[in-house]
Length: 309
Image: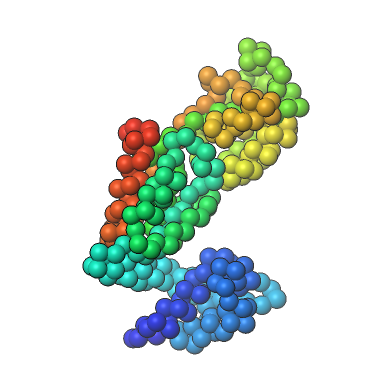
């Protein structure tokens, strides 16, 4: 394995990387379209080729070894390079083909500033055969996933601003503080809602960083946490919590009386969403075209966005 990597080894690495991503053989079965015995045999063959144990698997569950984690890290760059090579060879024949892996965070599809659907539609028209994979991941995992080359590009807010990544602003998202029917503040006018009232509420907080809001001189008291907007919405709509949600996402519930914005002139903030890529990754013709279409559609729909540091 150390001196020879052919098609067979690439296939084994793809299987192992997929199992590692899904954190188990059974979880990866649908993605791989292989039987469990076949997946297990592939991993065993890879372990034989590299000469180390890559993972623990069996009744106690699935767990990567230290060597397995390192092989996953190394395989990301190798598998990405293989895909890029195939795409660039096709480009020499004036054919745009290949795989495009995009990571997004949840609940941006109905954001009026998000032009990803229009971008994908034009890409499909202009390319010969492109396999596009779009996956929703947690906001606090987005940048690491791009840095580890699990995806070609990510769309979401900048949390860590890693030096290995490039951030191109695309669109913004307005967030406000909401409560649901049955909450003590739901029917109370904003003029009668004070900081002491908010300080007494149970606050459903995001796991990823947002601007810190205070009531009575201290941060809003966190009673629950989640990294997904859907979970925050469920908690807030239960009537037991207050929490920040995107305005475009909450709009329909507000119209139907299922949510109410609290003190919207004070408790609000703006997220900027970026196209996030690796700084030093060689840009293929496919990625260059996708980036050009993505920027053009977002400039046309929302105008330039200034990056907030």
